[in-house]
Image 1: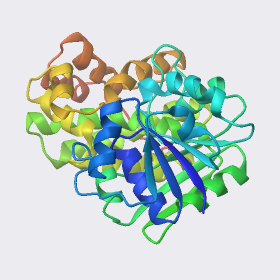
Image 2: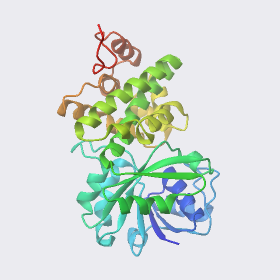
Image 3: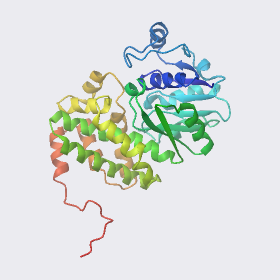
Amino acid sequence: MAKIGMIGAGSWGIALSWLLANNGHEVCVWSALPEEIDMLEKEREHKDKLPGVKLGEGISFTKELKEACSGKDLLVMAVPSIFTRKTAAQMKPYVEEGRIVVNVAKGIEEESLKTLDIQIEEELPQAQVAVLSGPTHAEEVGKGIPTTIVAAARKKAAAEYVQEMFSSDVFRVYTSPDVLGVELGAALKNVVALAAGMADGIGYGDNTKAALITRGLAEITRLGLAMGGSAETFAGLTGMGDLIVTCASMHSRNRRAGILIGQGKTAKEAMDEVKMVVEGVYSAKAALALSKKYGIEMPIVEQVNHILFDGKAAKEAVGDLMLRDRKCEHSALPWKE
């Protein structure tokens, strides 16, 4: 049995706490919101974000970050991406040398264009940082629905330790050395999921959805390769797999927000209605900035930014995508004649 600190009590943090406790581990959950901890201690269920998932006695709750971090075998960071750096900095006095810290959030820092693992490493230089990501909805993990995911780390031993902690008969964990690729796939698919939701909100069909998923993956892969990620990663669980599930499911907060935007609501109105952090809204500007930095064409990302921040109508953006210059699907494929 391991002692695990769960830093963050949103739907994903709670679902993973349930999973880890079912695996026989002792889990201590921290939230920056005191009222959230009071509710969890009383109800032993997150009635707002993950109703129906009852939390057993192997899970404790605390308002003190020191208690959640100190003396733990593993720390899991499950705060929204916009709070990752700040929370990691607050954790620093309590994180021991060599402790493995697993990031399970998805996003890119808008100001620095850095992935979450880099932010954590900068604030917690004494830690070994790993990433856990893949096609996963908290609502399904909390019900024990079979799920696959990837644990990525720079050191094989760290990835395998995370794999050991989380693996179960309903939660299969693969390992990967491509931390950058996993982080990029996780963050950028949220932007494409917004676009997929917008298409749904307009009333378009499966043809449009398939086009957005496929061409969205092409954009993510082009940027990821330019930044040093591996093609295999983007074709796998944290690339194509995560993109499919986020673009297709009503569990996806990014798709749900996109639907509302496609129906005419602003990004703020959509986020207020979804009542959760919509990571794709925060990653969209960073994705566009990265595309310009590396000279990579990302027309879907560009149009999502126009819709979110320039007031462009979603239907007009789709029209502009359809009327772009005609091209070959895969420019690297040679013609025989």
